[in-house]
Amino acid sequence: MTLHSSKIKLLIIISSIHCLFFIIKLSLGNFFLVDSYEYYSLAENIKNYFEFYSADINASTIDLEHYTKRPPFYSIFILFFSFLLNSKITILIAQNILSVISIFLCIKLFESYYNKINQKILIVFLTTSISQFIYSNYIMSEILFQFLIVILFYFFHQIITKKKLSHLLYFQVIVILLFLTKPVFYLFVIPNIVLCIWFTKYINRAYMFSLLPIIACALYMNWNYQRTGSSDFSSIQNINIKGYNLYYFNMSKYGENHAHKIDSTISNQAQKKHTYVDQQNEIRNLSLKYIKKDFLSYSIAHLKGSIKMFLDPGRFDIYNFFEFENPHKVGFLKHLNRDGIKGAYQYFKEQPLIIIILLPLILLFNMFKIIGFVLFWIKHYKTTSSLCWFMLFIIIYFAALTGIIGTSRFLVPLLPIYLLFSTIGYTTKKPLIKFKRPQYYPT
Image 1 (tube, rainbow, N blue to C red):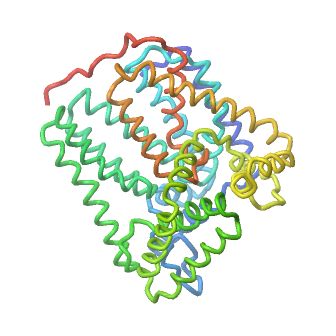
Image 2: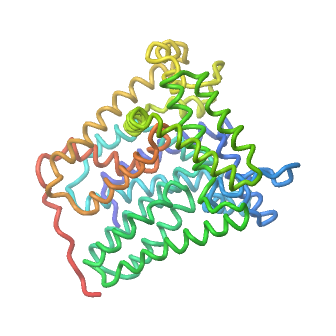
Image 3: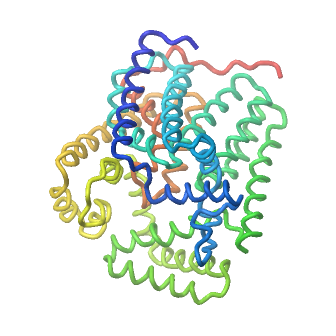
């Protein structure tokens, strides 16, 4: 695809921002967050022992949680770009390139249905979504995951416009790679069945292809069972439900002491079980039991968290990226949940100047993005393409599963499409002339 001069300027601007954050991160020198060490340990263990284990495999005790906590695909990505090329920096270079590709591929997809994208608004929205650039420069799976999601949308578009079996096959392969990158996507095998049935409008017997991710998921879970005795897709599911969803809900409603007490009670009860699988089942069952007791209140908190994902200005991301010291050892979210708005405001006043300046500004533009996103659907829900509806489904899917722990980090995989929805929401007033129903081609 030939780039017009306006696209070249946009490429220069976006690439320059990526380069700026890359240089800052190189000068600071720390490419790791807490999760990064687990991804990196998994990559090291694959390389040295061909063991899929996300902690120190030579430690005195083995924690079975680490056999399934991190799916392997991102660590294989690390393995290639770090160990085989002998540099962690090449991981960041690769991720920055993938980030730029994801943004421009999304632009191309939207321009298949809509007129020229307003680049000024898009640039403003991008520059105030700095988590995109921050996570391009951490050893974290967000950017690879984002790239795979964008490729999924690309093959969806190809399926409905070109009707090729190969594109449907590639679509299913990407679904598999997605849940082998982050566990959140393994449940997509269920809506994928419905989607493949719908694809029969374009490709005969498309529903049969939905079996591929199901088989891959079943094989992976069986492999987990052989290694740990538990067929859970990932141990992170129970870690999240107990240590984050339930804990933050209890802290918000009942206070930190109560939250810690319930968390300890569940852990102690689980430790009484003699096998790993029984411990995992106990954690899940007890956590869900507490949630069901407060189901209505929890549901409201879960919904608020899903919305908060779109508003969060990314204090944690900025704080860690620029390596500011945190004497409190806890962040804005914990202060908000524990002490309410007053406590969060008091905490905010004690932050570094760059935080005080950036956070309100980013929060303001995040509100503008939400408004633009809503405007898009108000204006175009009757005429928009099936691709956009699929994108909306994926956004809702992520927001619903993220819930209480929703922060800017969890929006990163969806940022390019979300920002383009918001941009078009402000810049179009009627059905656009480039939208047309997909042309069908013979198989």
